[in-house]
Amino acid sequence: MIVTKLSSALISPSKVANLLDWRKSIGVVMGLDITRERIGIAVSEHPEHFSEPLALNSILLQDRDSSPNRSKGIAKESLLELEAAVRKHHVCAFVVNWPLNEGRMGEQCGKVLQVLDSVMDQSNSVVTRKRPFTLWAKCAATSSSDSVSTDEWGRSPVFARAPVYFEDMKYSSKSVFREESSTDPSLVAADILDDYIKTNWILDRKMGKATTPKKNKTDYFFSTHSVDEYNCEKACLQAALL
Image 1 (cartoon, rainbow, N blue to C red):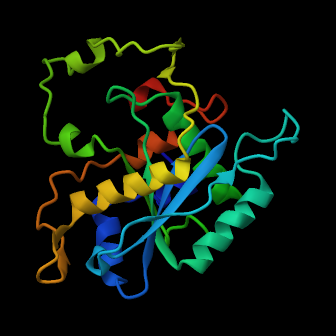
Image 2 (cartoon, rainbow, N blue to C red; image 1 turned 180 degrees about the vertical axis):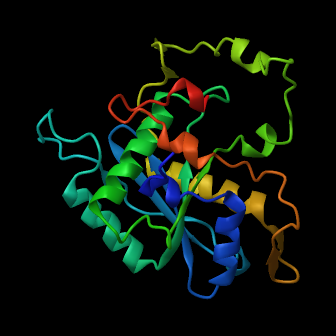
């Protein structure tokens, strides 16, 4: 399979931690929360600085009066805002919120990949191989450590679970998703960064040090081939990714 630009910039969570360790003096990691309408952004220095993730102003994906037939990715004007934020804060890598639903990937995950793909297509100064990204879900700490047994045909009981019902739930053949939350996506991005940092570093405030564990049990990694196979047109993941 031919590796796309998007998958070539995807690395594991521990590699982003290593990258920030190398650039702890000036490097910053940026958190992204991509929703249907906006991109929430937050930044964080190396945890050895003991500073909290800073939520920035979220960015509108498309102009409110833009044509319905316009690209479903990111508008050029919005991309310029994102580029400016990356330059201003000396971003060295991205931690992107991976919106799993009951531990499964669906339309919202496809939207994340679609927007990232659009960013890479239009700009070579945001997400690149030298400024990579990783996908992070707050359930990462439990999903990787709690192994689920499969039968001899590779079937897992996880896929037989019914999703938890909530008001105004919408169903489709591809996904189950909530309506757009009223929560500022930049606050979500900051929360994701905070969870990522606390998971990937051991913080010792008395000694003033932040160290990464020798073996990161939560270093779950998404296959680059799976990223290449998402359905861009419908903004959802193919069954092979599940």
